[in-house]
Amino acid sequence: FPSSDCQSAVADIVFAIDSSSSISYTDFSKQMLFIKNLVRQYNVGSNETQFSVVSFDSRVHPEFSLNKYPSKTQVLGALSSIQHHLGSTHTEDALNYIANNSFTAANGGRSGVDKWVIVLTDGQSTDPTATVAAADRLHKMGIEVISIGIGSSADQAELEAIATDPQHVYRVDDYDALHSLMMNIESTTCGYNGNVELIYSGPSIESCKMHQVLKILGERYMHCFLTQVTY
Image (cartoon, rainbow, N blue to C red):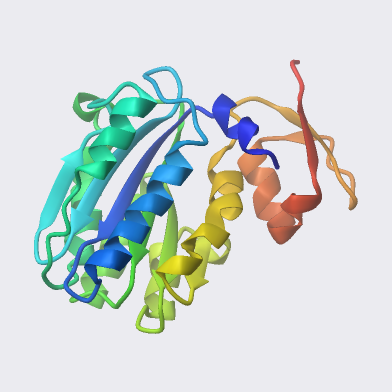
């Protein structure tokens, strides 16, 4: 559906981005461009969508918290300043950091809004067992997790373990192809907190929350026409 629908979204979204040595400087820049283009689709603010970034390599780098930058311009500026740190792929440490810190009230986490973690990685984590356990912590906290694997070295089983469910797993061949996921990620994360009426070329669904509809429809969301309804 149109990107304008994301402007009505109210969510807390944390990006966990791979900053390891396997990623070239050019590809890291493409990864950051993808994130910036995604952020541009939302209205940013304490009563709208908030963004945070945690990068990881051999260490965890909390780049900024949900409540650090209250405007889209500030978030985009902060994204442009993130450095490629280099090191190994300690995905498990990043997910544990997010579970422990990112959604706390002190860091801007809000109750009653959709919470998302979007993980981007080009390889398998250093400790796959710990990564699965850390992801499970997020799932049990009610946080929706999207995993994006870039390139042939990303491990499919691990991507599936990180994500909330198989519909939240995405693969692309390289960093140039990240842009092809824009509509998928927008559609998945732009959930309404209220009820919506859905008209589309398929079985009738009278009303439900947007994120529930999208899980049912899968790829068919591209054929939907969505109208928000007040009850």
